[in-house]
Length: 397
Image (cartoon, rainbow, N blue to C red; front, side, top):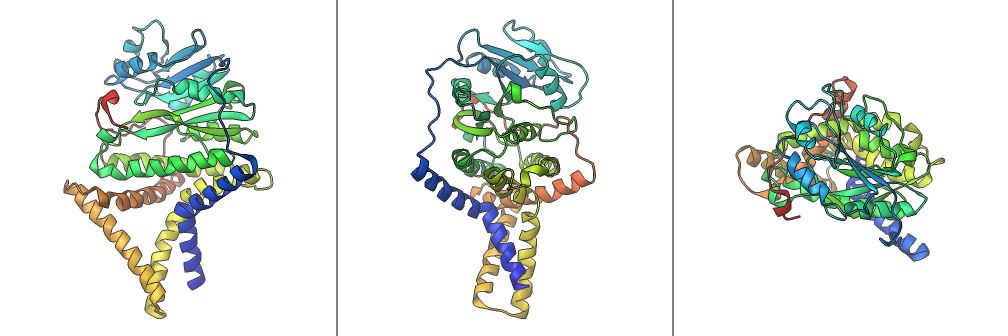
């Protein structure tokens, strides 16, 4: 039992903390040998660019999204803005149609976001395509900061940063902001070492010539699209100064719904990107992919449970001060998570308890997502999580 226990503890530690430590060390070594990666400047001839915004029943926020989009900076004559509203049954397409400077594609049928994106891509002829969501708001220079990276011919995709609006963070999802700060650090280091492992749909871009259609039932279309470009030998760059701001989930139940969908999509992606697990073909990318994504989406949540059960068994059969300390630490952590759950149900505002609670919810979501995917119960169609309401430009970031 003891070797399995220590292996489980090591993998759990490596997945959530060890990889970050190792990654930072590797980045420091790379800087010492090759120097820090410096992004191209803004004094260049920018490529033509199309901003594609998928919107599904966003009547309550679409006016603000349009105003935010029209204030984005980009060279005149090189930017096209395309809204795709397939399946929207409210006034979203009617509101967009009032603006002649915007292109609108709408069909009444709801066939899923990726089908809408594929349909839009048949109409796009620009060199670069940027994708963003209707419920996120971009900083004014986001497009410029993203597009500058395409001056480097090794770059095939660029991912912006997701930011959670602090004024709109609910107590139940206080851990979400903490999680994204850590994720942003890992993405910066991944990008500097070699490549980001996938892009988030809130804000990412691709070279149109490298775009490959994914299957209609794809759950994490943004992740799959970007990783298919990486599989062609191109880098995915992370641009933290180009960011998409959005509110947190309205409550932990809504956040759990979103995380379960992501976890189901993660398992689906792993089954379809099998070649990226080969370190011979992709030595650095494979290491990053397995360390940053595959372990989180597969074995680590199971090993957390196994480590606790084995720790209890070892203490009962063998004992030992070290095993006692580790068991106490595990029980304390899960007690704090349980306290967070109780306080969330009773609407008590003690945010410190919600970080372990959020961590446990994330890992439970992986187990639920695996079960849902294997049971064939996860649809690729849009299923929005409810989010906090806030005026985007007044929110602290």
